[in-house]
Amino acid sequence: MKLTRRHFLHAAGGAALLTSLGCEQIPDSLLPIPPRDPRAKGPFSAPTGKEIDLVSHGLNRLTFGARPGDYQRVRAMGKTAEEAFAAFIQQQFHPERIEDKVCDYAIRRFETLSLPIGELYEYQEKLLLAELTRATTLRAVMSERQLFEVMVQFWSDHFNIDPSKGDCRWLKVADDRDVIRAHALGNFQDMVRASALSPAMLWYLDGRVNRKSQPDDKPNENYARELLELHTLGVHGGYTQRDVMEVARCLTGWTIRKGKPFYGIGTVEFKLNQHDQGEKQVLGETITAIPKTLSRQAREELARNELVRVLEIVSLHPATAHYIAEKLCRRFIADEPPTAAVKQVAATFLRTKGDIKDTLHTLFKCEDFQNSRGNKFKRPFNYIVSAIRATVATTEAEPPLMDYFHRMGHAPFHYPTPDGYPEEASPWMSTLLWRWNFAVTFAEGRLKHTRTNVEKLTSDLGGPVNLMAHLLGRMPTAEEEASYHRSGAGLALLLASPAFQHC
Image 1: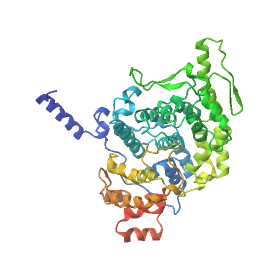
Image 2 (image 1 turned 30 degrees about the vertical axis):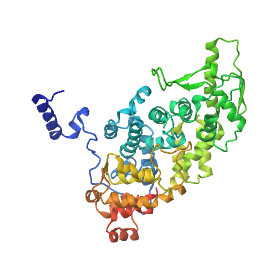
Image 3 (image 1 turned 30 degrees about the horizontal axis):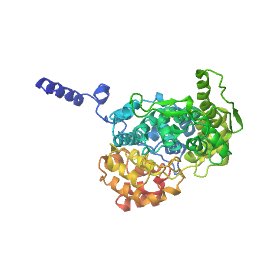
Image 4 (image 1 turned 90 degrees about the vertical axis):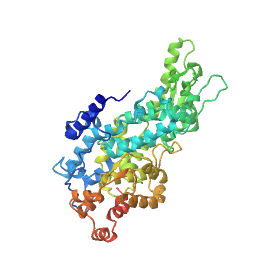
């Protein structure tokens, strides 16, 4: 379109409108990307205790790190720290009620995230992965729905898919949206079923080629094995090789439309003539053979339902409850999950038939969670994001920042095996040098496209002591305060300190 004088004046008038009006008066459709962040205004209050209190602990574990103002906001939710933390949990359990305008506008540039599966194939896979990774980073940094984003990360590891394999390069975007994000705080059984029928998972673990068309055909066991070992019962869940084979038989016939004609490409389909219709035994449960005398429609309904039945058996198995509880306690309590906490969490998981919110509520109420403070070593992604949040830095999640995730081995959606990134501290100890490098580069303002204003931040927090208290979740010790002033690079020292690297 030719830009006429009228169009130019129209645009100029719009720009003047944006300048003259406050951000809160501008129509949503005219807001810049990202809009100004109204949260980045002082003065802020910081924790005043010598130890990490329950509010700071909750912000450490249920979010990707406290921003300036988060502590005072959460603490104001109740008369006591316990009441405030309980109110914060309930708020975070309902992400749909939390306004997230700033984050939503930052993400809206990534148009591929909302595309139907078929249209994803029209884009270069590098673009899809870049947009998914950048959006994940910005959501972790900016979203008010922090517990939701933390659980998205948890389940992304649990149902890990490497986008470099086959059509996963295009399909992982839909899996993240339709499986992980759709069920992150929902029901575990629903999420397992969504994952089992995810085109990306069918590609990644070869479910699309699990078929029995001829009497001598042997089903592909890859997905069945990982379903039992990684997604549900766990490696010590009591299943046998026979169970793996029988689950694989139950799941035969599911595939993905591919190639010409391109209409419906990426769509999950079921083919009755590729399904094993004989009797199966799964973990002691009998799945009866499909009578050949039934109509094709009736046989197909029974065959399709075998997937549902198998997932019912494995998703709500006592071994699954223990395995999921153990993983959640490892994430939120300690690398060596306390036995008592695991039992409590597993009991709630079984009683509520896999309700994730109820399961987490039991975990957050247990004594082991509330008393295990400052003992978790942040994984690299969490460490970097917490530094950005703590300093109210602006970021576009551009390649210079992404490079640090890659160098530390924790870039989202880049883990090559189905078990997902490890939670324990030991695999990440080799990243210490790169953490220190990041802390210095970031604090000195040399990280392109990711910046913070140290002077303003310190002023808004009321001085260096409060800045230290904000970053550490408690008042600094005399030694920490002396080191801060003596170093000449106080912010970098704080970000590289053991106290900040733990949560």
